[in-house]
Image 1 (cartoon, rainbow, N blue to C red):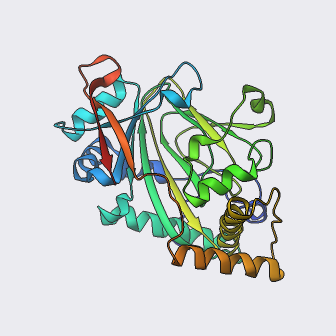
Image 2 (cartoon, one colour):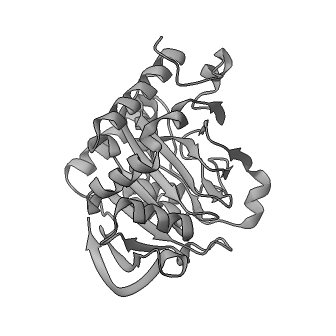
Length: 314
């Protein structure tokens, strides 16, 4: 095996991976790819359609306060300074398509997981880097692919909730899969926290959770740098197709509680329905445009300078 990425992966973790929360040590926080210089260069090279910058209320859980902004006229170093001083986070999508070294890291991650987890075969690998201010939040949401969070700098608290009702209503995840609703559209109540697994991630720790588990994140009072990796497997693809097809059946036929088959004729029927529906372009996706109403400014309060709102389409 190549120089190992994981520092404490035990045989039991292969049985747990994808089925339960797995919190492991890693060495990727030692990489120069996450230094200030590398991140500043990456910010400057990332095109507008490959990043998001958001601000939000850091004192409460209020998804309505989440706003989209733009990095305009700043160097990468200035953008990092704005994050240190502000209430913002910058999400850089697919850095592996911009600099080859991130692609090498992504391939090494999944190569090692496949070596350590018998039978694990994945595809559609993606990577995103999140650079975030002290105390900011990522609100309660669920992701569609398999997801892993790797902590590089700073400390954050992660709440992971069961991927069953009431924490994940089936109608809601179906809408997310169909593209009709945003990931943060899931209903959340503070009492959910009593049923969450709460993990404090420090540099050199990672967390992988079962498919679609809702989660939310609160930064400690420090700059944070982390990255996510995501993937699909045949099993995850089947779950996606079931959610997709059931969403179509719920919307078009009014089915209240469609079955969720994991095998057999029911699964194949849903695979076929999802494939035909997507092929015919019948998917009613949410609008691809979103409102921009601030620009990042290190001199402004919380690094947020309001601007006249305009729509950006991706």
